[in-house]
Image (cartoon, rainbow, N blue to C red; front, side, top):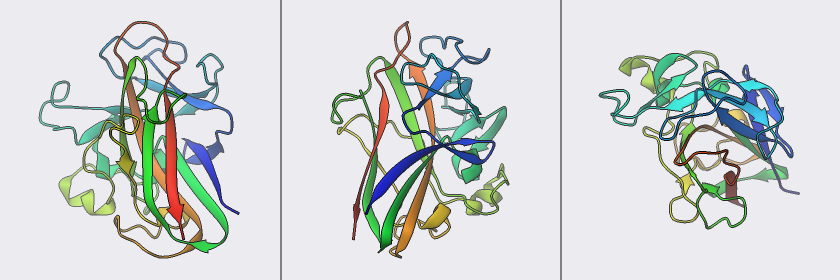
Length: 222
């Protein structure tokens, strides 16, 4: 039997989200507003409306050439450290997507969408989102900050903006348990468990709280 679960990473420890979600807030922490056009400075496990405070997450903020000259959309702020995306370890990702099955299978055509929580083909309402896959399973806790260290990771080189069915984020094929079998996007091994990791960042494009935004994952297994 196949099953997909979503986990948040709290200090590198997996916390199953179940019916909960992830909320993005300002620098003052839970409940603090994010200015229109700015990107979040804190991330928490919360409910679907962003009003119930849960565990604090490692915050990863999208950076571009406007607010960090020269980054060319390749880097992010993890907590307070500027890193290339491929220098971010799995343990500091925002979300872990896990597929399990009673027998060993391959997972192919894996995709992430950001949608409005009503129609998977429609983009989020009132918020701009960025996503990047992280494939940096070992050493688990080591950040990479220099070009030489980029061999530690083989996930996304740049942030992308998934919008419903208009633009979906392709994920690595058959990453295996905890992503250990994923040197790149073409792995074809089988496993009873496959893990994908990603970082998320969000920016409101109008005032007010935003709850019409969700992450949808699809896969084909054989």
